[in-house]
Image: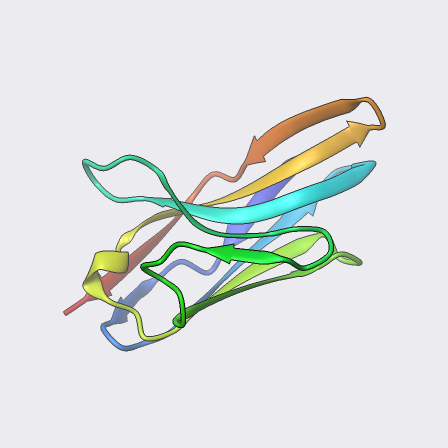
Amino acid sequence: VQLVESGGDLVQAGGSLRLSCAVSGIAFRINTMGWYRQAPGKQRELVATITVSGTTNYADSVKGRFTISRDNTKNTVVLQMNSLKPEDTAVYYCNADINERPLTRNDYWGQGTQVTVSS
């Protein structure tokens, strides 16, 4: 099982970006999925998560600007980022809690995608 991310780019403040993450390989069940980010010199932090049923959770810093969604038929999760700010600059990582088999469960991370917001 692998997580493959796409969508990172350089954008001006106020702009938008859409990050996508696809789960490749065979998985029995994909549980909560989410996005995290890590800025230079800082710890990795939660951006947003979404459960199988669609319940979402956002960091206070992105509420009202970012939207997380998932397609359970395609095993994908998307982060729509609007009104971007320079402080959103970071490497963004996709995360998924996956049961490869009914009794085998692991946490998976993507390779990261760079988002840079210029002022």
